[in-house]
Amino acid sequence: MKKQEVKELSIEELKEKLAEYKKQHADLKMAHFVTPLENPLQIRKARRTAARLATELTKRENQ
Image 1 (cartoon, rainbow, N blue to C red):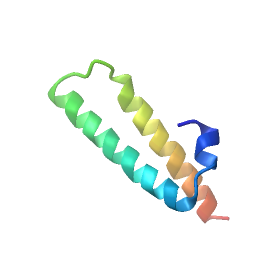
Image 2 (spheres, rainbow, N blue to C red):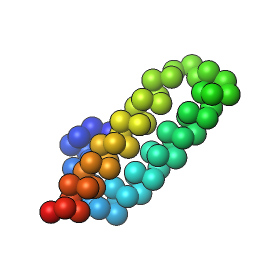
Image 3 (cartoon, one colour):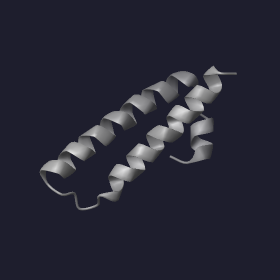
Image 4 (tube, helix red, strand yellow):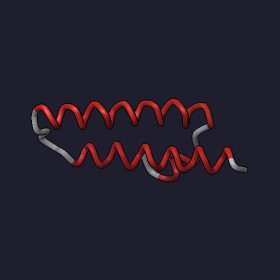
């Protein structure tokens, strides 16, 4: 997800997507630990997207 896409989401959508990406990140890490993934960069992408979502959520809650 790009920065602009994150800004367009509502707070509830941000929370849902954040939970989704955190779960995806955990699943990818576990799968990579058991058997190496074809594209391990998926782990980084999921982690960074979750961070973007968390940052935007915190920013909105502090306003």
